[in-house]
Length: 100
Image (cartoon, rainbow, N blue to C red; front, side, top):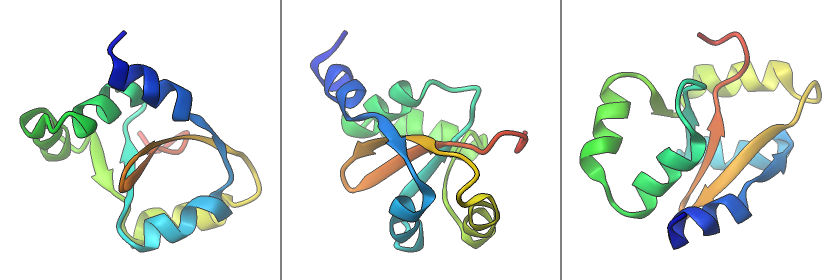
């Protein structure tokens, strides 16, 4: 396991929506498809693998949270925690269950 990946794995923790909402509103929350490994995406961002990140963005497998995503998560608020990984300045979260 790479040092970057190990640090990301250590940073991953359950998080409540209330803690993440400000990051989403500031455009710093990346929603990752459940078909991808959150650590793979975090490592690509942390190591500036812009080609891979662009491919995921273009394919809709990763996206910066938009207002529709914020609204969906507002409706889910309090129902479940999510896992989050920090890759400064971003917070990465998996898409909500049932989004795909």
